[in-house]
Amino acid sequence: MVNVQTGILIRRPRAEVADYAANPDNAPTWYANIHRSQRLNAGPLGTGSKVAFTAKFLGRELSYTYEFVDYVPGERLVMRTAQGPFPMQTTYTWTDDDGGTRMTLGNTGSPSGFSKLAGLFMAPMIRRETRKDLQKFKTILES
Image (cartoon, rainbow, N blue to C red):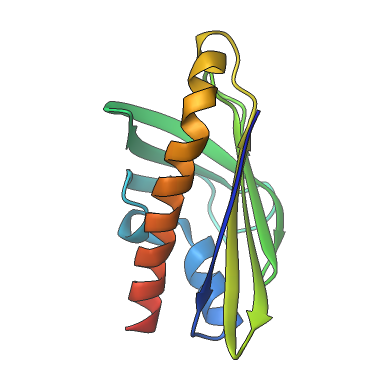
């Protein structure tokens, strides 16, 4: 099991931080490994919305689809994918903190087969990449 939680304080109002983070159109601007995102449903984002992402991880191009399984604007977003050898769940939470917003990004997954062994090495890599992504996110929103 991989379970990585990372957080950062962003000196912007919670609604602004949450709106930017929850909008999948913004993902390629602050996630280093995500190159493309595409909404698969028309209308506003909400529980049941699906988004296709293209990313590069461990030197390989990956395509996967996340589904919003829990979305409370300004509080939390939980997205899940069940495809591929490494099903993942990504959770964003936003809380008021010291005049700004504490954003927490969590990634959990249960690798199977060969990916089970890779899972032992993935947690530190995911943590390192997530910290860099959150720092870039902070820079974008605070500038």
